[in-house]
Image (tube, rainbow, N blue to C red):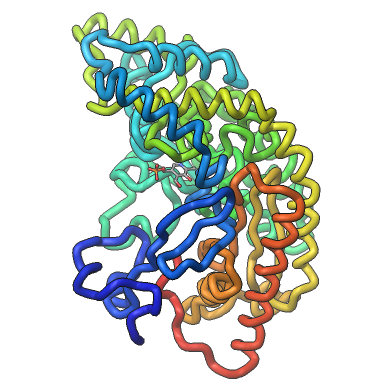
Length: 467
Ligand SMILES: Cc1ncc(COP(=O)(O)O)c(C=O)c1O
């Protein structure tokens, strides 16, 4: 393989260890250099324009050239470029943002803790669950249940929550105390003839059996992305969450909703918890909170959790947790401006007005010979590729078929993302109906190319930018 035409020299790229990249293949092909952004487009160093069909990493909700966010960062840099929140210190943008988030919350919440990434927010939520149960005199409640194919991040604890093989393999994860239950993807995991209702019941039963096996007195919390994005856009069936939440209440297990991708309009409501009727005790959020223009994340806790945390910190003498850059003035200023823009432009209603087009366009791929399932909600969706539509048989993973679609999509001016056997779409929320049509037209060309490639003979592994 030669150096990619739009890459810089190999010696110049050797210093970056790229996340989610095959390092061996990368040494040969080099990076794809993105130089600038313009609305829903990004432009590489050869001037090629791409529709960013994944909003970067499910995050650049307002596209790549929102001047108001640039200005908000600039203003804040001039006023107060840094201050922290340790030891009771504060500054106005952190205070205002926390207030705003509590106002927006889908369930009554009490306090907001700031972090810098989704992984940190989820790690914090785990620590808070332990702190909470210790504080209320249930020190045995320590186990956390997540789901297979969940994605909650990459730090030691959040990677353990993540239910994907490559996040565990050779990292000696998951750590103990973290367990995984059934993945609620009907298309892939339902038994033959099992309808959605019966499947939801079976998933809930499996959760209850796990809790009973482990001992309910040892289980602290259950983590859920309302819609499981990085696992391949998994939309749980109706009644699933109703059944799951009844079990969590029965065994006094905290519900932690990971809104890192769903939050701020993505599913057609401000939060995924509204779309899927979740009533969490803790909510974690990041990404679209700042439209990705600044790294910022938050953990929102209800009064029950807060009062236990308050009591424990009073007893110990401090709440011994915090990040230097948590609640950073520039990040909080940009997040505040982002929320203002969402409100002024009524982003939730904008998503609602285009999500029909987005979902019906996605469903129209069902006729494609490579597509077994087309699924999604709001402005997020995925195509699951299969080698046999009847039996749902998957392709040999070493062929990197979904990755090949991603490569062909680049040639047609579209960036999307292969996750396992799925091709994912999650464009900036400012996308228009016409642009959705153009995005899918480019995706169809990529699928057709891939079909032709498969027909032409045995593919060679194409996994070098598979994730
Ligand atoms: C649902 C969810 N939670 C947590 C994370 C981790 O966020 P970060 O990459 O900012 O650590 C992600 C990242 O994609 C995510 O999708």
